[in-house]
Image (cartoon, rainbow, N blue to C red; front, side, top):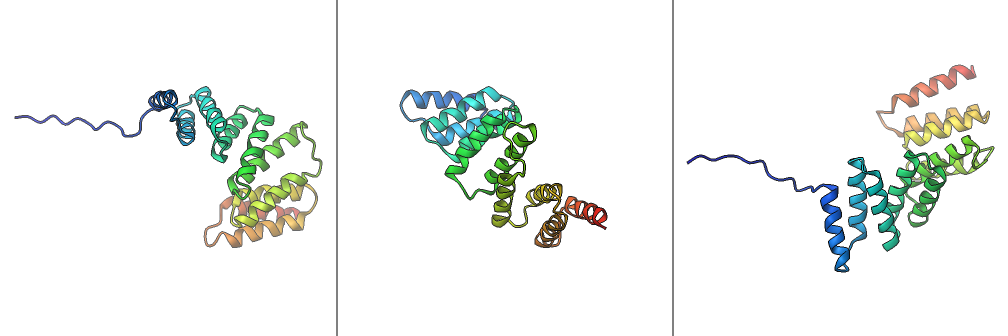
Length: 192
């Protein structure tokens, strides 16, 4: 008797199979917001952008969630539809105002819009305030520290930018990101 080994089928179905199941659930009145967000994420990973948008949108139509708006915001940002991304992140933040991820994403979009002149904020107050809030909630957030230090340095507040980076390095424990030390060294050299 010979035994032929067959690999087990994946327990992680494709976005298409999940979408089909979701259509069946919708048909019987049992579709799920969480499932739409899951299918949206899987569709994004499979480079099925339109399907991802469709699922995120349907999810937030059923019940607005920060995850659904975050998914839409990310897609819109990658497609350079910054106004739509801003709207999605504003809606996500209304649902989860203390989310470090959402605050940081919103700051990135605000900065991009300001830089392209679409939403002028000459002193970048809103973006700076969002980044400060990120660092209140997660003091060791290196990307927020780097971005905030750059904006502050660009505004001519060199010493404050140095303090932001020193604080970020101290708060990162024994393993700060190399970018923090590199940027600090650059600021210290330019300030001497």
